[in-house]
Image (cartoon, one colour):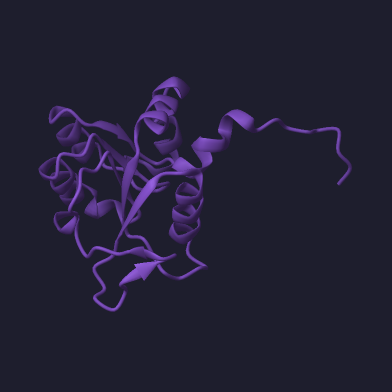
Amino acid sequence: MPEADVDHIYDYDPKFIADILRSVKTIAMVGASADKTKFSYGVLRVLHETGYDMIPVNPNPNVTEIRGIKVVHSLHDIDRPVDMVEVFRPKEELYGIAEQAIQIGAKVLWGQIGVYDDRAAKLAEDAGLKVVMNRCPKIELFRPFWKPRLDLAI
Protein backbone atom coordinates (compact mmCIF):
# COMPACT_ATOMS: atom_id res chain seq x y z
CA MET A 1 0.00 0.00 0.00
CA PRO A 2 1.48 3.38 -0.93
CA GLU A 3 2.33 5.66 1.99
CA ALA A 4 0.53 8.64 0.43
CA ASP A 5 -2.82 6.83 0.58
CA VAL A 6 -2.73 6.04 4.30
CA ASP A 7 -4.65 9.07 5.56
CA HIS A 8 -7.41 8.45 3.04
CA ILE A 9 -7.74 4.74 3.65
CA TYR A 10 -8.30 4.97 7.40
CA ASP A 11 -11.12 7.50 7.41
CA TYR A 12 -13.19 6.75 10.51
CA ASP A 13 -16.59 8.13 11.39
CA PRO A 14 -16.04 10.63 14.24
CA LYS A 15 -18.85 8.93 16.20
CA PHE A 16 -17.00 5.57 15.97
CA ILE A 17 -13.87 7.16 17.46
CA ALA A 18 -15.84 9.10 20.11
CA ASP A 19 -17.76 5.96 21.16
CA ILE A 20 -14.49 4.08 21.67
CA LEU A 21 -12.89 6.86 23.71
CA ARG A 22 -16.06 7.22 25.78
CA SER A 23 -16.44 3.49 26.45
CA VAL A 24 -12.90 2.35 27.25
CA LYS A 25 -11.50 2.70 30.76
CA THR A 26 -8.32 0.60 30.85
CA ILE A 27 -5.70 1.15 28.15
CA ALA A 28 -2.55 -0.94 27.75
CA MET A 29 0.04 1.14 25.88
CA VAL A 30 2.49 -1.14 24.07
CA GLY A 31 5.68 0.80 23.47
CA ALA A 32 5.25 3.23 26.36
CA SER A 33 8.46 5.12 27.07
CA ALA A 34 9.86 6.62 30.26
CA ASP A 35 11.70 9.18 28.10
CA LYS A 36 9.82 12.47 28.50
CA THR A 37 10.89 13.56 25.01
CA LYS A 38 9.08 10.63 23.35
CA PHE A 39 5.60 11.09 21.91
CA SER A 40 4.32 7.97 23.72
CA TYR A 41 5.22 9.56 27.07
CA GLY A 42 3.13 12.65 26.29
CA VAL A 43 0.18 10.60 25.09
CA LEU A 44 0.35 8.38 28.19
CA ARG A 45 0.47 11.50 30.39
CA VAL A 46 -2.57 13.15 28.80
CA LEU A 47 -4.67 9.98 28.74
CA HIS A 48 -3.77 9.24 32.36
CA GLU A 49 -4.55 12.81 33.45
CA THR A 50 -7.85 12.60 31.55
CA GLY A 51 -8.84 9.67 33.76
CA TYR A 52 -7.99 6.54 31.83
CA ASP A 53 -6.47 3.62 33.74
CA MET A 54 -3.16 3.36 31.89
CA ILE A 55 -0.97 0.26 31.80
CA PRO A 56 2.44 1.02 30.27
CA VAL A 57 3.89 -1.99 28.44
CA ASN A 58 7.66 -1.92 27.88
CA PRO A 59 9.86 -5.03 27.53
CA ASN A 60 12.96 -3.35 29.02
CA PRO A 61 13.48 -4.97 32.46
CA ASN A 62 15.11 -1.75 33.72
CA VAL A 63 11.89 0.23 33.16
CA THR A 64 9.69 -0.52 36.16
CA GLU A 65 7.45 2.55 36.25
CA ILE A 66 6.46 5.51 34.12
CA ARG A 67 4.90 8.57 35.75
CA GLY A 68 4.43 6.53 38.93
CA ILE A 69 2.51 3.83 37.06
CA LYS A 70 3.81 0.27 37.30
CA VAL A 71 5.15 -1.01 33.97
CA VAL A 72 4.42 -4.53 32.73
CA HIS A 73 6.80 -6.16 30.29
CA SER A 74 4.21 -7.82 28.03
CA LEU A 75 0.45 -7.84 27.49
CA HIS A 76 0.35 -11.30 29.08
CA ASP A 77 1.71 -9.86 32.35
CA ILE A 78 -1.40 -7.70 32.86
CA ASP A 79 -3.46 -8.84 35.84
CA ARG A 80 -6.79 -7.15 35.04
CA PRO A 81 -9.14 -6.75 32.08
CA VAL A 82 -7.97 -4.44 29.29
CA ASP A 83 -10.42 -2.47 27.18
CA MET A 84 -7.98 -1.11 24.61
CA VAL A 85 -4.48 -1.98 23.43
CA GLU A 86 -2.78 1.11 22.03
CA VAL A 87 0.29 0.43 19.91
CA PHE A 88 3.39 2.64 19.78
CA ARG A 89 5.54 0.12 17.91
CA PRO A 90 6.60 -0.24 14.27
CA LYS A 91 3.71 -1.22 12.01
CA GLU A 92 5.50 -4.51 11.25
CA GLU A 93 4.79 -5.57 14.86
CA LEU A 94 1.06 -4.80 14.78
CA TYR A 95 -0.04 -8.25 13.63
CA GLY A 96 1.70 -10.00 16.54
CA ILE A 97 0.34 -7.44 18.98
CA ALA A 98 -3.15 -7.97 17.51
CA GLU A 99 -2.80 -11.68 18.26
CA GLN A 100 -1.87 -10.88 21.86
CA ALA A 101 -4.69 -8.34 22.22
CA ILE A 102 -7.15 -11.04 21.16
CA GLN A 103 -5.61 -13.52 23.62
CA ILE A 104 -6.01 -11.14 26.58
CA GLY A 105 -9.60 -10.29 25.66
CA ALA A 106 -9.15 -6.63 24.69
CA LYS A 107 -12.11 -4.90 23.04
CA VAL A 108 -10.17 -2.39 20.91
CA LEU A 109 -6.89 -2.44 18.99
CA TRP A 110 -5.58 1.07 18.32
CA GLY A 111 -2.53 1.72 16.12
CA GLN A 112 -0.86 5.07 16.74
CA ILE A 113 -0.09 7.47 13.86
CA GLY A 114 2.06 5.53 11.40
CA VAL A 115 0.99 2.16 12.83
CA TYR A 116 -1.29 0.29 10.44
CA ASP A 117 -1.58 -3.18 8.94
CA ASP A 118 -4.70 -4.35 7.12
CA ARG A 119 -3.98 -8.00 7.99
CA ALA A 120 -3.80 -7.14 11.71
CA ALA A 121 -7.02 -5.15 11.44
CA LYS A 122 -8.84 -8.06 9.77
CA LEU A 123 -7.53 -10.51 12.36
CA ALA A 124 -8.69 -8.30 15.23
CA GLU A 125 -12.05 -7.44 13.67
CA ASP A 126 -12.73 -11.11 12.90
CA ALA A 127 -12.13 -11.77 16.62
CA GLY A 128 -14.68 -9.09 17.55
CA LEU A 129 -12.37 -6.17 18.36
CA LYS A 130 -12.94 -2.65 17.13
CA VAL A 131 -9.90 -1.36 15.25
CA VAL A 132 -8.47 2.11 14.73
CA MET A 133 -5.18 2.59 12.91
CA ASN A 134 -2.96 5.53 12.05
CA ARG A 135 -4.63 7.78 14.63
CA CYS A 136 -3.68 9.27 18.00
CA PRO A 137 -6.21 8.98 20.83
CA LYS A 138 -4.80 12.13 22.45
CA ILE A 139 -5.57 14.12 19.30
CA GLU A 140 -8.96 12.45 18.81
CA LEU A 141 -9.91 13.09 22.43
CA PHE A 142 -9.63 16.83 21.97
CA ARG A 143 -10.74 17.09 18.32
CA PRO A 144 -14.33 18.16 19.18
CA PHE A 145 -12.94 21.21 20.96
CA TRP A 146 -10.68 22.42 18.14
CA LYS A 147 -12.03 25.63 16.70
CA PRO A 148 -9.72 27.36 14.24
CA ARG A 149 -9.13 31.02 14.97
CA LEU A 150 -8.16 32.33 11.57
CA ASP A 151 -8.62 35.93 12.70
CA LEU A 152 -5.62 35.90 15.06
CA ALA A 153 -2.50 37.83 14.13
CA ILE A 154 0.67 35.83 13.57
